[in-house]
Length: 117
Image (cartoon, rainbow, N blue to C red):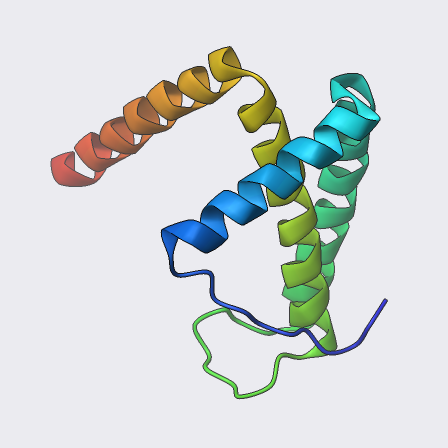
């Protein structure tokens, strides 16, 4: 794995459509079951990256110009998980709509909890 991440901001609709088309091509090639298996593996790797980052004593609220090795690894693993989730959501409208609805429900529920405190 590389030690330094390159950060590119995708800030326009055209770039987002290009990325979505690439994601669809990837899941179309490998198939949804393969990508679900990969998602399982990547979630495990993300858990390990989170634990290592936390054990390193770092905090996400600290602003640094260069990410540490632990933060860089966390970023890479988060990107892997997000890419696979995005592929599955793009390939299945039912999953995409379900995730959208549940996310909204859970955000509202958490805000209700916060407001009650």
